[in-house]
Length: 393
Image (cartoon, rainbow, N blue to C red; front, side, top):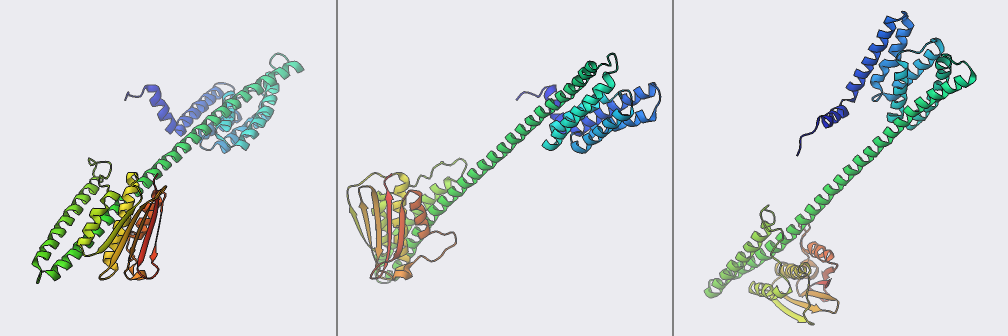
């Protein structure tokens, strides 16, 4: 990046030190006026007018209305009491008019223009009209000259004011855009955290439920059927390895050098393996598929898998002993239908409230994300039913 030029450095410095610049300019103008008064016919009143006309310009941007009001009052007093032009008036008055138009409120700017027109006309008649030509035409020309001069200063001030307003609007717009970008980033991060939380819940809850069921079964079977205990331990090891692999892939998303997308994306084709795991954990599951297989987006396929996984995990945890579950996957013309029904404890099989709002709430969130819907509740005649409809696209 090239180094800033002297002019650029000056613009930056002057933009942050406006008070210092105005004070220096006001001091120089005051010194000039007092020097002129001191080298001409002495008059304390002329010195007072020099001070009152020039010193307030030090606040022409920071206290624009009071400063220009003092200059205007001094200018009209000067017009009424002094027959000759003050050495600082031709600079102080236009500077005050410009400052009021550029930095003052609209009402003060309009009032300043009216005062400048009236005062300028009177000053032109009084101070310029009697130099050579005291005729009406000469005084009118002098008045118009001064009025045009002050009106020009006011016009330049208004242009500056409009420019400052435009810059302020652009700055505010940039600020709002930055806030919007930050909000979008926060929402994206929140959505990603929610997605990861759902995946972690589904992976951990399902795996631990299967592990607990296998461990309990192996413990009871070990005294009389050691081979069943060995089979249970093998199933526990396999479930743990799969869960560990899934968790590693999921947590890789959180690393800066990890993959940008979560690579574990099971779908309807993986339901047979899921149900086999649950059967190994002691759950009797009947699985039926109807209709021709249709292609699903990865996100929709994952949602189907997670809904079945969550529902069957809940059956294994809450439906009680000798529970039986029926899983039906129907490929309809425009959507896929998923139904899981068990013969467990009905309303008592509801997922217990857990911090973070996972479980059945997570099913509904997943379905809504892909344009679908999930309903869950006690089934007629007992047990519990989870039903989901998801569009293909």
